[in-house]
Every structure is written in C-alpha cells, then in structure tokens.
Length: 339
Image (tube, rainbow, N blue to C red; front, side, top):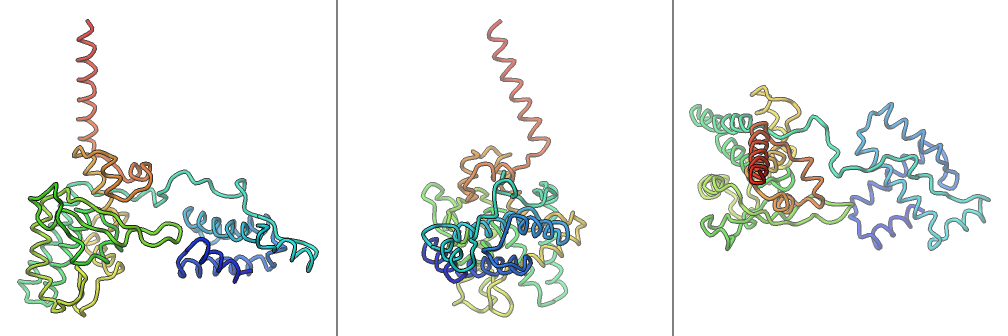
C-alpha cells in the first residue's frame, strides 16, 4: 500500500521526494499508534491519535491540520476504486479500508497563515534600533581588531535586505549575486531595480515558487552595492554564487540567520516573539502605511490570497488616525456640498 501510494504521489501529483518520505513516515506513525492495519482503521483510532497529539504532545493547529491532510490523502488513495485495495482487502481479510478523516473530525481551514498570534511586525522605532545595533557591531569589531568585522557587516546588510525586499529566511539564504537586475521603470536604481526570488515557499510539495520583487525602498541600493563591491570580495571566494558567505567559504544557512538575529534581539531586550520573519511582516505593513496598493504588495510578497497579506499587515495608530481624519474630511465635505 505504501509503495503504491509513493508512486501515486511521485508520478501523479509530482511531489518532491522529501515530502513523500515525510508523508510515508507519518502514516507509519499512525499505524504504530493504532496498532492496526489500514483495513481495520476506524474514525475512533484517528480521534484518539489526534487527542494524543494535541493533549500530550501539544502540537500547533497548523501541524495538526497538516497531519490530518496526510492521513486523508492516504485514505483517499486506499478507497479509490482505481487502485483496487477495497476489493483486495475484502477478499483477503473480509473487510476493507474506509476513509476515516472527515469534515466532522478535522480542523476547518479558515486562513492560510496560522502562525503564533504573538507574531507581529516591528514598529518603526524597534526596527531602527535593531539596524543601529547591527551597525554598531561592525564598529565595535573594527575598533577591537577582531575577526568578526566582516561577518558583522554581512549580517547588518543581510537584515536590511530581508526587510527591504520582504524576504523569508530561506529566500535570503539562497540569494545569488545574479538575482539582481535592472527595472526599466526604475532606471535610477541601476542594477538593483528588481530582485528575482528563486527559492520561494513551496506549496503542497511543489517545487520552490519564483517571484520578482521590485525595489520599493531606494535607500537599500547603496547599502547592498557597498556590500557586494567592497565587503563580499574579502571573503575570498569569488567563484561562489551566494550573496551571503561564511568565513568558511560556504553559503549562510537559515539557522545561522536565526542565531544572529536572536542574539541581537535579546541584547536589545526586544520581545521574544520577534523573529527574522517579522522583518517580512514589517515590510508588508510599512508599504501599506506608505500608500502602496495592497494588490501590488500581495504580488510582490508572493501571496496567493489577499487574506494572507491582510494577516501580515498591522498598521500603526498614527496611520489609523490619519486615515480616519481623511475619511471624515471627505464625508463632511460631501455632506456640506449637499446643504
């Protein structure tokens, strides 16, 4: 059954091998927990496993939903007439598999984003403090003569880049020097008018999504240019394609981005809820505050649904007050013209 399901996922659905292995492993976990073969599974087995995952292991809702989707997919495969498992099991065991995952015993998917409710964008003041602290680490390393000046400069530029183009950690990690190119509608930005993101977030085991992100914050252009022209060559691996290099001549990994970000955040006493992904949230929110069209932001962020962009968006009190004042002024002007 599992081998056939692997072939169906690989050949019919074109899922990635890593995704297929994770699916198969999860089905094996459920079979081990239930201590039954798939043709004997019932909804009660599934409900008990869900209770175990939530009550004892404390898994997040998004994780639970993913698990439910996998078991549902395996059940769909087993109960589809095209694969013949129902008749084969009936002939061999006198029973047959049934779909045990239904709407009435699974979570309802209301939003694409289901991260921690404590996750939020930086305020502009927090963001400035964070960037200033990152720049200070470069100065401190240079004054002390320590070897960390290069990596501190790299990290300061990296965090500004993540914010300026609204990137995820993996997207930033996988950036190559050839990913920047000119935008004919923004010639003043030179070769940094557009960033091609080639390793966007996967969807349901699909290959990485690509997107193009226009440069909307011109201040980043001299920052990234200075790094690429004057700092990156000092890592002494000119043949390596990566933008962000390590002292060991490799590509900077997402876990390393997390580690440096966490140290800076904690040193500043900022809330633990702030993560590198919050820089992306900040980019979305600040563009909306500055008057960018939400549809433009949605496309640049690579969001399939506008509801996802809305979840990322948190506007400041000043912005809300200015929008309220503008709305009231329009209403009063309209009413005044009628009298």
